[in-house]
Image 1 (tube, one colour):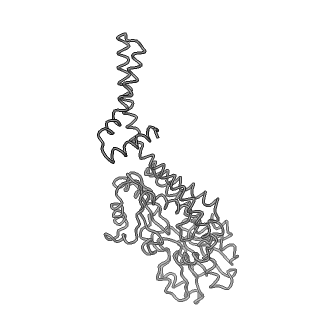
Image 2 (image 1 turned 135 degrees about the horizontal axis):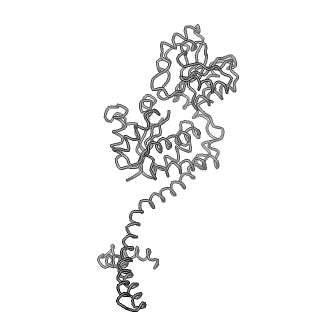
Length: 413
């Protein structure tokens, strides 16, 4: 059994592919169970807007890629150009880098750590998080904490939310005169609402499928809560729309937005779609007076002017190098456990055999000193028989190598 990671991310696959490979929360447990049944002894799935990755303890990475294609209804080999497979040490290093924000579209962004913790909890709940993956994730969290506490990687973070505010500022002279609509009530929308609220917009609205969740978030920002099903009645009232939901289908189609633009009498509408799969149909971007940006568009923007955090990357990588070495040492030690158990069992068999012989000798009336001498000699002969026989049977370079190994094992050098 080995450890490996298989997946795709914003560097290897376009948004159109990534949104097809998302594992939705309601089906995650089922997918993990399917992996455990036929392809892996341990499995965890990390699925975000920027990546879908399978962390697996098993032996069939090729079969896993084929399963991923079938699960998401791709043609055979349809995903292979976008996938990477990282074995053993590479998988460990990758997990540490992902948790630390080094592999993110926004260098140093903190959200990925929470998403990895969610992935570990989901796998644990599904019964697919064994000893190896549990250790990997816990170590990843500890490495991320060390990186953030000892480097400047996480400071002055240029987030997607901040980038959205900057982009809106290029279109509207002042955000204080604009109405902002947030679709969704998750962590990303909360972060965006925080950034936009700091600009003092004229009005903010939160739309969500569940009115209670919309009310809870809206209350924090003195915003208006509405149900998602009433969106068609209110869309035209807003100059800025930020959407990030877990919907598997688009929420805003071209027709709906087109009607809103007409009702606005061609006043511009700025739209940000941070969801994967996308909440806003790509065709909306073809409409005049609509400025539509996806998560990939914002990623290109926030990749600029990151010199302060790039300077911390080398320090973070050094921390990760050390931690990878320690984790691989633990892995190798764990792989030797069966051999160590077998050696101990062999030695224990020899001990019991000599002990029984000694007890029989005492029962016959032999002196304790003679019995103990025979016991010790018998143990020495049994324990050293295998290595001495192997040394005797070897020849040439093999014999010299074996002799050096035995000398080191018994500390005679």
